[in-house]
Amino acid sequence: MKCPNCGLEIPEGHMYCDSCGTEINFVPDFEPEVENQINATLSEMADELNKEERLRQEKIERRNAIIKAIASKWKLILIGTVSAIVVVIAVFVLFVYSNKTPLYYLSIAENARSSGNTEEAIKSLREGNKAHPANSDIIFRLSDYYLEEGDRDDAVETLRLITDTALFPEDKVLSAYESIISIYKQAGDYEKLARFLSGTEDTMISDLRTKYVPNMPVIAPASGTYDEVNVSLKVIDGSGNSIYYTVNDGDPDSGSILYENEIVLDTEGTYKVKAVAVNDLGICSVVAESDYVVVKGAPAAPEIMEPSGEYNQNTMIVVVAEAGNTIFYTTDGSDPDMESKQYVSPITMPVGTSHFKFIAYDTEGNASEIVERDYHLVYSRLVSAEQAVNNLVSTLVRLDILLDSSGKVRGIDGHNEYIYNSIIEIEGAGEYYVVVENHVSYDGHTAPTGLMYAVNTHDGTVNRLGYDSSGKYTLITISNR
Image (cartoon, rainbow, N blue to C red; front, side, top):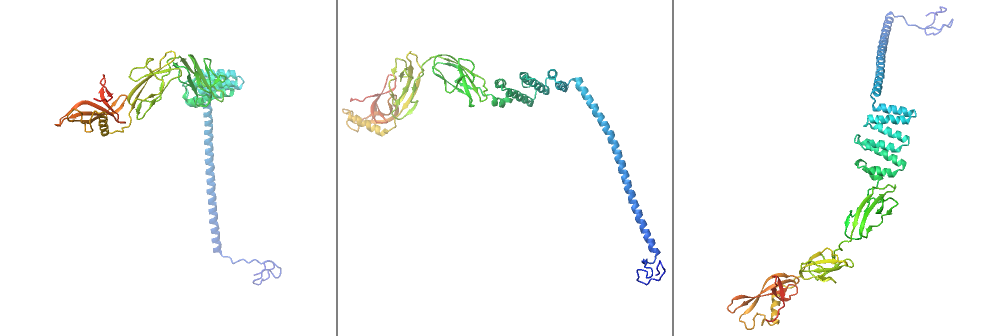
């Protein structure tokens, strides 16, 4: 290889010319086929790159065209929508003002108020209420304007257009009630609040009424005529509130007599008793009122300590009457009076069945009601029927009616025998065994003698048994025949 600069032959492997120092570049031998192949490859790559670039440009152009089309379309839509809104608003305003809807009156009133003319605003809302009485927005707004003017009474009366009619739903009515309560509370006018809440029977506000207004107290006993002195009255509230009352006076309040004990009407006369409950806020309930006529009538009936019933032991009958009264009684079924037996001390309860009637008389001769008691005193049976028969025979032998326990009778053939028959109760005497007497002849013939005996089932006491004029059993003392 020769130096391209000086032409000197360059030895193989030298990188510089030994003569001039020029750098030697080594180039491989030229091969046309290889070059052609390289050129073809490069050309294909260039075409591919150009194709992708064209596609990318086409996509960008299509996207831009779409965006432009959408923008144009939305522009038209937006213009149409704005126009439509303007038209709707114009129609709405035209409708409101031409038909004088509730909104018309509210708008006119607000414009007047904003201009400082609240009186004109109130006038507009009152006209609106006449035109639309069932519209609550007008009523609430009108009440607010009255409050701004310091007119609480008209504000409340306006809200009562809602509470006192059936035109409005419950939520509006409740809101009106709460607004009225708020007005009275802010003014501290609890008396008007109490009257307002107490003057309605609307169950919707029962909770509000309970919260602010005490329940009306109850006076017992009820109004009426009482034929006794010392009528005691109780006044009950049930909520722990203070209670005040008057007797034959005006309506009570917190300055009246404080109820602490029962009210006693202790003289004859006519009475009007009024009572009121007052809570911690000083709010009074509705006034309770009762009328009484007290007259001195009959004395109280005597009180008998022993009730009617069954008894099985010795019992004393104790009777109590009011001081100064006298007690009389009967046991024969007749009504007692001042001619009957006077009660002065406890009475021993008779054995068996007894019926008592008691009455009391005061010093002026006025009689009480008659009180009746029925008693049945029967002692426990301590004697058997067999013992009763043996006791009877022994008693007859002791009295020399029989000669011996076999039943022999002096001067008479044969002997007597004694047969238990039944158990009876003799009024005022108790319970007895009935024993029948028979005579047995020597020949064995038995015949009743007609005599009967009564032996007490409790103590074995022996008596003859007979009848009184009314046909009732009676006891006869045994004597020698």
